[in-house]
Image (cartoon, rainbow, N blue to C red; front, top):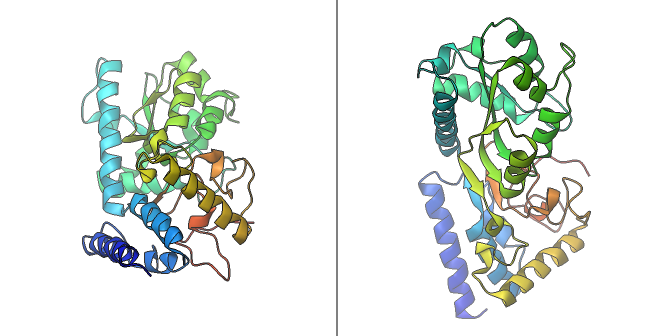
Length: 307
């Protein structure tokens, strides 16, 4: 193995150990960079894998908590400009908090995790945290415009939000969130931690009255399959080699190429191609080779999925 490749591996692992030491990355059982790098044998494979690993973004819980505070703070700024009588203490005695449900609503929706974080990290009273299905019933009991802040970790394509805002009708009143906002004057704010640019544009275009106050927006340069991606360092040749390598490895592992129409996909759901994970889990927007289970493959992260 050439000395330059040995040096590259040593430097990459050294950075990873540093991230662990400062608690930016978890211990190896949650993010197994050493095992993942061992999947790659040739110099070219190792070079690409090291670049991808350096590009991978992991958000530990303390950073998640800080981003949650930031997105809620941004919500307060917009509410102060929308409601003339807004006061800071309204965060705890006037606002209600809920979440946008997943495509198929289930108890494991990440929004519920963030309701608990609102209670434990921001001190929001339990009686201000409500299930998505409770929103219209709770608002019907209030006689003035009320702010509702919806929380979550990640918005990818924006499809779930679009559906929840424009098409999902509640059993309680047969109205959508959009109709509740328009006819009753309640103010809805969506405060996810991170929004991919695709989802940002879709929500801005399709959910006009929904205020969006994310902590971060990820642009096209975070998509591994976009030649402007930071991972490839403005090198067209490296981009083509790197993406071909991901596709080839995925095919060898039996990862399907469904044009982004399924959570398990060579490019991730919606072909978003992101390289991110949270301590509590990873979005479907990441390519499956980061978490795929195979007898000849050590995944970088653990993620529950169904083939």
